[in-house]
Length: 132
Image (cartoon, rainbow, N blue to C red; front, side, top):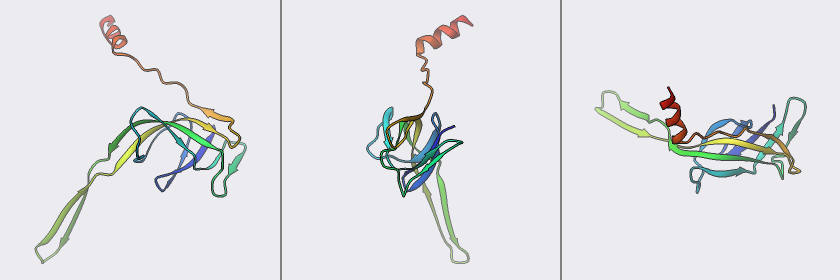
């Protein structure tokens, strides 16, 4: 199984084709669009691995942006005892949900590719429900 290590949003992620991951929000990106990650730190499979110093030039990972959203609320509560002082604050971190499609090597060769997603239309769903 082929994998790649990419860097985005100040973090590193080990990804495989077909995998869905949550990353820090990608700026200037709309849902249902294609995204390319050119900061590939390493890629390989069970037999061989290629490491970058620090990145591998020419290697890239293609992904589909599924949606931009916010995580659950994290509450920050500070209390100073015996001082009648407390403060409550909340934070919702933004993220992007992406699906990895293709991993390319440094010479542009395709290493691994995800299977195509079958999108059912509303008409097909209605036909299935009426058949039951």
